[in-house]
Image (cartoon, rainbow, N blue to C red; front, side):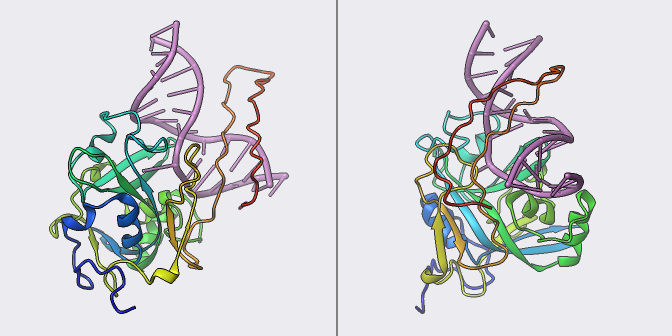
Length: 242
DNA sequence: AGAAAGATGCCCT
DNA sequence: GGGCATCTTTCTT
């Protein structure tokens, strides 16, 4: 098709705020193929998005905004086109892009992408935390690491060309060919797994590997025996594996 | 004040 | 394939 998910954005153009005013599921799909870039004193790194996930607000049990507005998720309730960056698992950052008008919480989690510029810088950043010569931005935390995204960018306006963190339309505008998109359940989500709100470019090697949610056994300090039978949530559905 | 869980990634066997 | 690292947020006494 000539006009894929054309939203009026010319290739390479910084996305307008209207791009993010729609529901997260639509925005997520249109974000595939777009370019996230972060300019720092060290240089510029650009990533073409290949995998995203949509999250809603109060109606979505898997959303950080499910229990209402808090200090952490405040950005999600703000105007669209801003970055919601949060810290998780004591060591990782993840970045979302806020959707829907101000007052309504919704966002798209950026899970993976292909580094198309600044690969050297991205590699250096990734090497700091782990000498893994693996994929630069495969996985939400890796993506943040490659782009040097941390809490300082929480609330950043990605629609402002003057912002250090921006999102541009890709080579063919926004979105990719409809036939090139796969959908499936979100990763690491307990409830609402039936909602196929994860979108990725079919067959793209930079897409992260699906990993079913597993509850990590709580570490018990000072417990010699360590006998805490955490009820093994028997997930009968073992169709997908790593 | 304390505890439990978390939109994960890495290293080791 | 499985366990561990590490800390912030939020809910519960």
